[in-house]
Length: 426
Ligand SMILES: NC(=O)c1ccc[n+]([C@@H]2O[C@H](COP(=O)([O-])OP(=O)(O)OC[C@H]3O[C@@H](n4cnc5c(N)ncnc54)[C@H](O)[C@@H]3O)[C@@H](O)[C@H]2O)c1
Image (cartoon, rainbow, N blue to C red; front, top):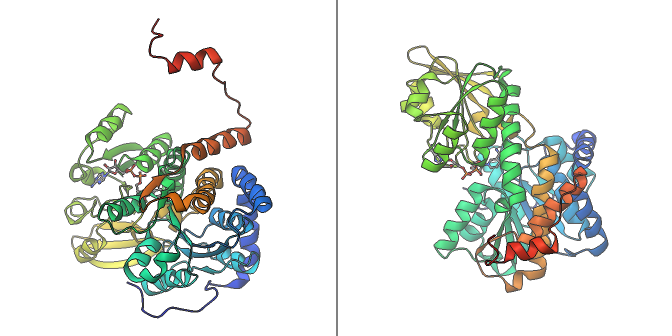
């Protein structure tokens, strides 16, 4: 875990000279984030976060930059660190510091020690609100920085794995402040996890390998929101998609979506490209590597780099070399070669750019509105995991439809009575 010393840097980025490129890319993303733009405009006028210190541990991407700017324009004092050692866009980190005056601690490819030093730097800000993608800040506060707890009014969480960690903290009674589970908003996981991860995971695998999906056997581990999205897009590109699952309902859904479902043991023998999206650990392990074809490509798009048992792959191998950016070739004792992408870290952020701005618009609109909600209501909230209030979730959907130029019908008075009544059956 982290070093004991608390750094006193006001930023730590790879190269501040990358700022001009980062600024252009941040502005590019901004134009596809109309909902966040509307929130930013209102925040600039109303300043609902005036003076509130926010530490955010998120993937440092162009979309996150626009969230950080929105919070800043709402009056918050924002500090940002990376939520994954490989997901940082160095030009964006540089621009946040140089052009937007947002202290940022994130370098793509940073080692374990630097990752945790950056987390410490974000906590040195003494946050009143923490924003996590994977619950690392909350975990650090609860395990090593309890002195910060009295000052924290609440936290928000972006991803499925983080929410699972936080729920287990709440269950064990160790959570000490309210957390809003942004991931569980309909306008987040139904779109970001499904369409965002779906497309960007395909993008990440293609950018790393330049493989054709058509005609390949693509094995998707986990048919949750992310897995469904990835399977859907891989199928659309002509892949023969195979799903592995542990949940019978999800497995059944995959069958009825027209996909082959089998165990990883069976899939390991025939797959060409494997991708884990489960939030679980050791989903692909030694017993599977032993069966894989030479040339098999293995990637992960779940939150942590534990879904593929990389140490097991290492110990089965006699040689390892990097053959392309984000591609490590492992040679097994019998000469077979297995290609691991992005060191087993979420491939859509490691070798591509993460989710497109259009979809992060909704996720980060939920983040911004949840921060405002915490600022206004935290005094009445307990140390639990709360959903995003339904009215905020629906507000995001309404604004997004408006931005897309889509209008929908409204219930008539007669229909409202009908739908609310149990007696009108005919
Ligand atoms: N790459 C990204 O940008 C990105 C975006 C959003 C979420 N995530 C992460 O992706 C992971 C999945 O998120 P989700 O929202 O789809 O979660 P989910 O809970 O909807 O789906 C996970 C699925 O994996 C299945 N599963 C668990 N263990 C398994 C195993 N051993 N073998 C096969 N299937 C197994 C579960 O039954 C479940 O259906 C999480 O770690 C989440 O934090 C990544």
